[in-house]
Amino acid sequence: MYTIDFGSETATVVSFPISGAHHVEVSNLTFVLLDSNEQIAEYAESIVTQIDDGPFEITMYEGGELLRTDSIDPSEVSGESGGIELMVSSEVKCVAAVLGVSIVVAALIVNMCGGACAVPYTAPTAAVCAACIGGVATIGAASIAGVMGCLS
Image (cartoon, rainbow, N blue to C red):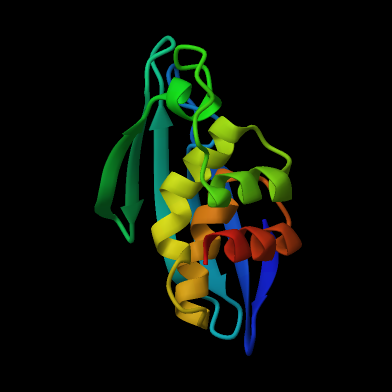
């Protein structure tokens, strides 16, 4: 749980991990509450699973509605695919540097939060982005702003 300023408003972000046999650590349920009216502004659920060394399967819900599903092969973002050095996007490199996480975890964050954080920065859109970022990484508000900078 932490707070973040969205210009004229302050929000409280609360994330709960989702765990299970094949759930990856970044799986979570996150609520963003706007402090001015103490109402839930946004909530999101991100479920990431991996069986054995297979691809990461990502399922995302926003406000209870299925937002999207995706799949990431970890060898394609880690540079382990056939010993060939693969191109990693500047967004992934930026997120990895800001959060101090691996390229694979940064790629998951970019995949999961890139769309939510690429819109103009306003209190409502920032709440959606913060819900995603805050949910997938146990980080403080200062790091959220840094990751938002990587993705915008």
